[in-house]
Image 1: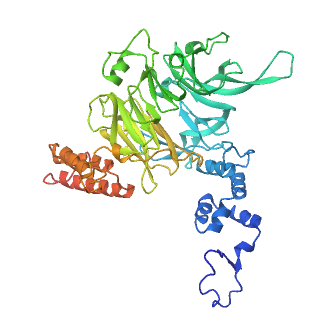
Image 2: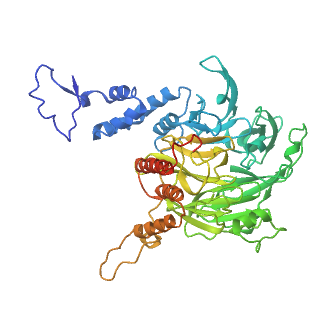
Image 3: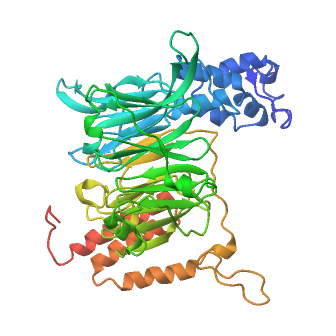
Length: 568
């Protein structure tokens, strides 16, 4: 009999009175290496749970020796543990939680499926679906090519399956990009920013590490073009903007500067060589003091976020400019690269850029939307365009944000750590599962979200979610000061306390006024469903209210009308 005895807890009560079980032995008498070896055979979930039982097991289960053995079992071909304060634990959890999930919008079975998992992948960092296939970049810089193929089902039938086979496209990759439009039909080529060794001088054995951009055909994975940069220039991100004949590649350096070059994508498959000019982008020439942290782009605009949280915009067409800002007053067709600064109340952490609308998330976890709102894709509860960033008050602390052609998606986490997917805008084609008519407010979609989902993407045919947990990336949101909470009333004189600190009463009155404005009972029920999605409730509570409202709505629709028809 082996007994776990914690010094801080003392002996087990009544342990001396137990007869016939032999003398208990404390697990602390075993060599630490033996305990770590035994614990390493447990599943990752059980190791984490065991580490929460007492101080002794917390130290043992948190040891790097345990996680090194677990990592070797999860990824036998992983030779290096990577970087970070806890490299083996980070590597083990990255490989345990990695996964790519997708749900097709069409067909009879609309359930969440999982793609094939490359054994060589060291976690998943980011992914990109193209016209026919999917590309995944891991934390070791390996880019994988996940192919769709015809496979045999369990019943012996031949069926088309998505992302069921994989090959290694290239190694040493830093980032990759394709056509920035939402429709994957236009994504013919894949641009990969990678690091390669180049010979210094012909006839010598020395070499230097240089960054390059390699272009691959997405259909076959064949490399059709390569451009190499000087060894003194180091880049960390690449995005594309513009049409195929004037495709601009924007490259972000480690120092926060933006360089650009233009290629003709229609001539990339022709076997010839030519020189392209790499030039400093105007945002870095006119504002040399700015240090850009990340970029986002679509076909007609580019967005830059600085290391201090500022946001600058480039808009290249008058139509998109009018949709985003509501006017053409400051648009200059002769100087389309002039950066425009957005006025925001706090530091911006990340963003999502659609065709004619965008979303921003600040350091307090607040979501701001701007642009065209014809289908309700801003989630403001109406269909009025917004020419400046407008806060969506009922959503906070998102994990990921995505903006498409005419709808938006938000990946959020509840108070019970369960994750849910919210969406707004156009629901045609099944792009908002459970809401075929769409919604002008963010509502919970009928999608089962993986526990460790961290990013998402939607195409015309499918919804994708990437699962990966990095212990080195801690939540970066700050607590919002009470003076900045919208709807917070001033404290009464002499009381020293706030009355209704969260503005709950004000919000409930606003909800009631929206329900009163609905003309029919069915419209009021639909509005109530949206309001439930806005309220800060647990996921189980929201599901309860939604199910109850569905029952009441069906019962109210069948009163005095006889048995309901299948169409109803």
